[in-house]
Amino acid sequence: MPIILQLETSSTNTSVVLAKNGEVIASKEQDSAGSSHEKYLHPFIEDVLQEANLNVNDLDAIAIGSGPGSFTGLRIGVAAAKGMCFALDIPLLSVPTMELLARQVTSEADKIVAIVDARRMEVYTTVYSSDYREITPTHAKILEEDAYEEIASEKLVFVGSGAEKLQKLKEFKSATYLPDAKPSALEMTIPALNRYKKQMWEDTAYFEPFYLKDFKPH
Image (cartoon, rainbow, N blue to C red):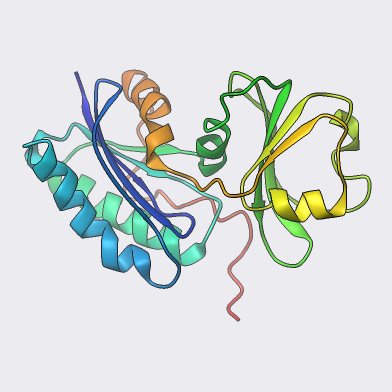
């Protein structure tokens, strides 16, 4: 029964979850802008371990939301995960951030579209089936009038910070928009366990977040 520490820092949401054999046993989240990950991440890790009456030596693996998302947030989360994996000599797992958004959708849909606001009229997006299988790989997309026209006739759910931007541009006939959804480690439990069972370890030394685009400082 693996005990997995799950971290998600790709957005403004600092999310830490402790899961045992696919069940959440402790969690802490704080959604706030600024340098929140530096402030909350390590105290949250200590809090969930204390709540579960465990210590770091009880962990079997660490899972991290791999992006895309905030460059700074991803770097902080991945650095923490890698550091702990090295220190404890346990595997590192990664789960795509977009899948964590898609898994928040439990209503009926033909397709789930994870959509994260980038700059101007650009978004990062991934299309999933109703059972969270990736149909269209994560890519950057400029929102135009014909955006998602190829699936417009289907029952869609757009989930993530880019949903509001899309909704202002066009309304689909049969679509639900969930713009307030933030990636959370709570949705990491099942995919992280599956990866652990299949021994889908990352190379801890060389693992990098999925930034999608090169970092451009302001």
